[in-house]
Image (cartoon, rainbow, N blue to C red):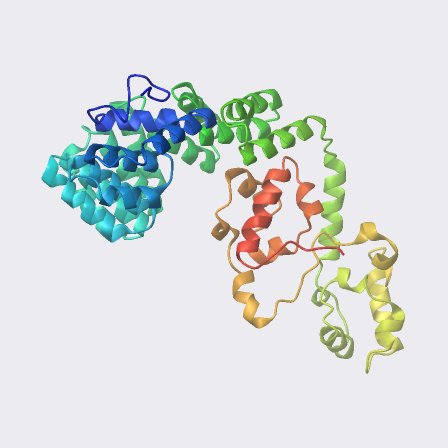
Length: 436
């Protein structure tokens, strides 16, 4: 049978490819949709075979295709060997069965698996399970390979990143690259760390190295496109996205991103207008408590849930006077305050442009904890996080008080980021503000 993508790596040959060859096969199979489909056909054609070697190969093939559950089921039935237990561990780990994965890794040692590789895989498994103490112990057992093994420094960097030790993580990625200049994962994570730290020049350089040494490294290409787009280098951003779509024509994020880039080319950003709108919002968000009011007026406004100047623009004189204990004297006080700012009661009801950018919603007590959560908990992409930083949005409550239009009004914020935020908020049972 013809092999897929790389004729020299045939998963279903008489002899199973080496572990390094299997890694290369996985990289090639997942480099494009067409390669993935062809390999899937090859795996399906061998599914009915019952020989021990065929069952093992099918199990590994299913894992390469991303079908971890089916892979684990098949590999349990395969003959005992190093390849079985290592790929079974990978499949179990992908399914979140960390204890079983660790046990499988331990068994692989009985069949000649490399002890350093297994210890590093155990560390990675503990890290993914959230047991950082156990992961650190596994890494400590490998300390003799410091400045010897690139993979050791990569896994140590991943652990430190999870611990929040970002500078140390970057240093270990650099050490890994000194030992193995083409260590793709170290390059990518170093690029990502520079990206998040705001060192965009270094991030671009590292992402370009990743792309140059990989068939199609989708995450690197899209992150690089974001950086180019942020720098208004739309043609370069488009080229990155086009490369992704060339090999993965149905990649939804890339499809949406391409639309964003095309829109950015014609987007007009009126900086002066944005400054005026920002100043207007600051005025409208001024707390009523900043002004000298009588006790009666202050208490009445508090009971009516009117906290800011913007709130006053959304209520009429008649509505104020209809409130118990609110009289002409209090009304005159309020009108003087508004007139000093060139505003008047009910103005927002007539002039939609004077609606504030953020209309604070009063969260009921049981929702308050969720609303006070940091937007970092949403685990958004780099572009979305940068846009929220520009908009000075730090909590979920602040984010849910934004409309789609207000988010899209931020420079370089497009449909891709909007859809990502909406989907992620929905997972928490939240949504953006609607003007309907």
